[in-house]
Length: 310
Image 1: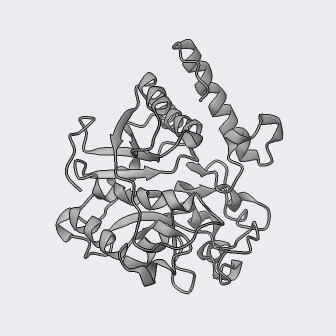
Image 2: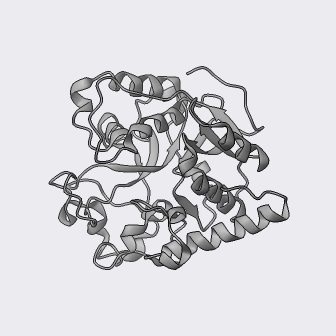
C-alpha cells in the first residue's frame, strides 16, 4: 500500500473498518466510548468504496476522520454462507498497510471501551526494520474456542478443553494482566483488536498468503486464521481484558476469570448486535452497558444539533 497523507498529526491512531451503515451505530458508539475514557490518541474510520453517502455525512457531522482503504478479496476464498460478515473481514488486514502511522490499533465496530487502554500504544513490538521476521509482529488476545453458542459449522476441535482461556481458570488474578499460553491449545487469535506496526514487508507477506488458494480453504475464520497461520507463535498474546468477548462472562464459559471492574474493552460478538435490540430486550448485562453509552452519545449529539438515524 502507498503512504497516504496523515489525517491527524500523530504517529499513533485507533482505527475501525466500516463498509456499510449497518455497523455505523456501533462504530459511532465505539468512538464515543474512546473519548469518554480520555484517550489521548485520535480515531480514524477506515472506509471502502461502497460505503454510502449517508454514512460519510454521519461521520462528517461528528468530525470523525476518514481514510479510504481498498476492499480486499483474496484468491479463491472459502464459502462463508454461514457467516456472511466474514467476506468483509479480509479488509481489516489493511491496518498493516497504514504506512503513514507508526502504530495503528484496529478495533471492531461492535466493541465498547469502558476503561482507558492507551498503554497499548506503547506495548513493545517488533520494529518496521525487522520486516515481520521477529517474534512480536503484532499483539492480539486469543480467540475463545469453546463454541458456547454451539454453532454446528464451527471446527470440531473448538471445545473448552482446547481453549487457552481454560488454562487460566486456576489463576484468575494473573488472567487480568497476562495472556494465556497458546501451547497445547487451538492457536488462534481474535482479530477484534489488533495492535499493529504498519509495515510494507508485513503487508506484502499477508498479501502473498491471500494468493494461496489451498490455505484459504482451511481458514474458517478469514483474517484471524491467516494471521494465526502466517505468524504462528510470533505475536504478543494479550489478556482478555483488551478484547473481552461478552461470551466469556457467561456462566460456565470463562466467568471464573472475568472481572467486571478489570475488563477494558467489551466485544459484542454474535448477533443480534446491541443496536439491533431494544434496551428492554437485552439478554446480557453487558448489553445494558452498550445501551447506556449509546443513549449518552445520542444525548450529546442532540445537544450539538445532530439527530440522524444512527
